[in-house]
Image (cartoon, rainbow, N blue to C red):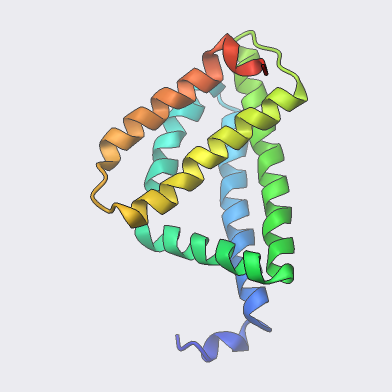
Length: 163
């Protein structure tokens, strides 16, 4: 499809970006729903992180997501869409992480969950930059290490304490 033809389907660039962001959020919503009904939320969360690593390290997807973030830095309308999706996504991550931590006997406060989710988001979003800067990263080794960190966040009693 030509660049001009796409505007038969979308009003403007902002509408295209909003559709991409919405599609990504819906896909993640499916993953969060799958996690919440899992018999072992903790291990399912770790297992699914392998797919997330692969997705975040895909150069095309990473480039597109980073372009959207760059556009959000310049365009308040795009920023609004990206930030609304982020709030929704972070709330879902917090709910899912809360289930995983509670399954391990951990009861953390809202601020601790918010920070744990920020760490997880930073970890995965950082993979996009690394995938572009260093396309030679061994994805298998990265997946192993990310899963190790996820287990630490989910299972460690220390992650729920600030200070």
